[in-house]
Image 1 (cartoon, rainbow, N blue to C red):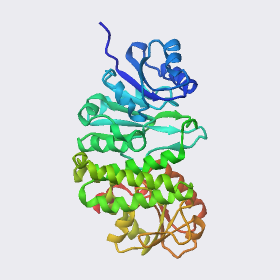
Image 2 (cartoon, rainbow, N blue to C red):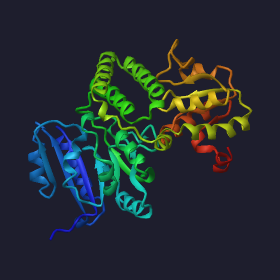
Image 3 (tube, rainbow, N blue to C red):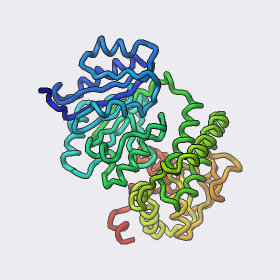
Image 4 (cartoon, rainbow, N blue to C red):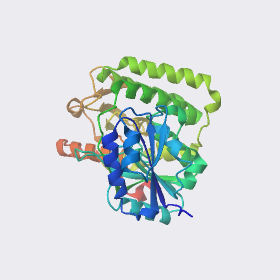
Length: 394
């Protein structure tokens, strides 16, 4: 009788044979005993001999050779066969650093409410990346409790790729599971450029984030987040010369959402707050404004979670003089009336306090460091600096 593995690794791939083979070597060396884990690869109809190479060089790997390209969500094809207590999703060019899987198992064992353990991702440049929201996992490195995944359901089949992690993370949160990122869990992500198509990425980002809003967000949050996120993606598309893919994604998302009303299954208001942190942002902002006697603030970054910071400032009757963003800032560009400017232009405006308006832990850390070095006025990250006691008092 075969032993049920502790951990099942699941990878989807297409036309990146050599990269995948290297990744499989790394996964084999994860540090677990061979009988404690298994590996499942879904080959998305590769034309470069990927399936044959895996069969030849890794006969112990469970290979599913699909006859079509199912994208990242093709990982679902492996789930009925991945029987490990914990499921680890990887990209074909990402792999766990030694010791991380053992630590992941300990995190799950110490917290029965933990549904997803998100890894910290290190790029070839040495920079780290993570999701825009701390309670959303990143698909190139996450451990999932198999029971939580079974109850929440698999990755959304019609997303193909882009934002599928958001949809599953929200369903996990709605089911009462925790989605947490851990600093002691690490994956290396090579970001292999092959098969990364900017136009397709923009189209699917727009379409799938629109799906996400229309399907999962409570009704009162649909309009503000639709306006915010679609405006931001339009700015990104213009900067990349990809306005046509943006419009294609917008049209496809709107039409399909209208034609599939039964797919709307919104999460609870409590789960949405856990995700978006609207009230928590306001609670953290109050003590900081009082501490710095601030009446005019500068928000740093026009990110996906900007709305929570803008809304908190509005509730506190504090003026937002501008949004500082070197990538998206342009003369004449505005967010809810506030100018969106490059960093150097924004710094010149009169303000009492600069706030890093970004919930992404790694990005917020970098932006806080950049602005602290160059700015002569207070700069804060609400989610890094405010004591817990002050938040509770607020």
